[in-house]
Amino acid sequence: MIDPFGRHITYLRVSVTDRCDFRCVYCMAEDMTFLPKAEVLSLEELERLCSAFIRRGVRKLRLTGGEPLVRKNVMSLIRGLGRHLDSGALDELTLTTNGSQLARYARELADVGVKRVNVSVDTLDKDKFRQITRWGDLDQVMRGLDAAQDAGLHVKINAVALRGVNDTEFEPLIRWSHGRGMDLVFIEVMPMGELGGDARLDQYLPLSMVRAGIAQHFTLTDSDYRTGGPARYFTVGETGGRLGFITPLTHNFCESCNRVRLTCTGTLYMCLGQEDAADLRAPLRASESDELLDKAITEAIARKPKGHDFIIDRRHTAPAVRRHMSVTGG
Ligand code: SAM
Ligand code: SF4
Image 1 (cartoon, rainbow, N blue to C red):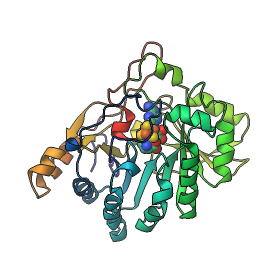
Image 2: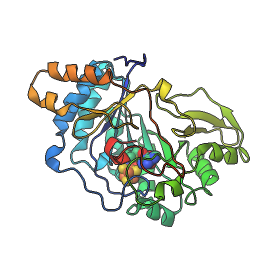
Image 3: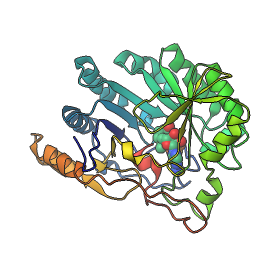
């Protein structure tokens, strides 16, 4: 699949549920209304959709959410998708998780062929973790991380940089993750979904500033390491570990975008930061053959926009898109 700007679409991110056992302050409002179950695709339908994308050239698939591991029977989907790893049609099957259920699932994930997981940890302080996630328990996540590493999964930690919340913790987060052999990626907060008031402006911390601060304590060397995602990586001289930055606001990376995103209702977003979307549920359900679905996918890819228009400043406090991050997944 090649879009109008010549970009090869080889990476599909799938939000398998919009539900979550946490309520992170930058991701969700406290009182979220979730999708009625009737609108959500069955796991079999999701597998059929993913398989159609794999047949069309997707080589990397990431499950996300909401929290992917709170979806009932999610392992049956992951096992089904694992078959594409065995056949060689898929290079990588991975997931982004808050880690709360990893202690239970890590071994099974590794058995199916998952090699890497991204786990979101914004702070190492238990009270602050509870404040950020509203409902989360850091000890539970730590047990999940232990289980993941015991099972041989390579772990990358995602941390959203939040002004006045975790901005004194970047150095400890680097030492902790690299000390455990985990990569660390800092993410700029993105204006997705209404949080109320100026919450987003209050949270936003440009990563250019974060990087300058980190460079005062550590030696950062440019690295050509890539995972197929948007992070730009550095090697930290003092720890030997890898540190990435995802900077949708301060450095737009859309020119090399290889991704599209599917929600649990079968809606395809061709860009995380735009409203335009294609409904794949109707063609999926209209026929048992994939002909209509293939046509809808082709039409959607032909509409992939050049990029997002994220801005956060005093004049732009409204979200760039109405949906919360938990709808499309990170
Ligand atoms: N529940 C899983 C988790 O937390 O890792 C997967 C879904 S979550 C939406 C995926 C990633 O998006 C997480 O690393 C989270 O920190 C990040 N995220 C959520 N809302 C965001 C926002 N408004 N701006 C930037 N990153 C965000
Ligand atoms: Fe849930 Fe992940 Fe959003 Fe936090 S960031 S509320 S864990 S979906």
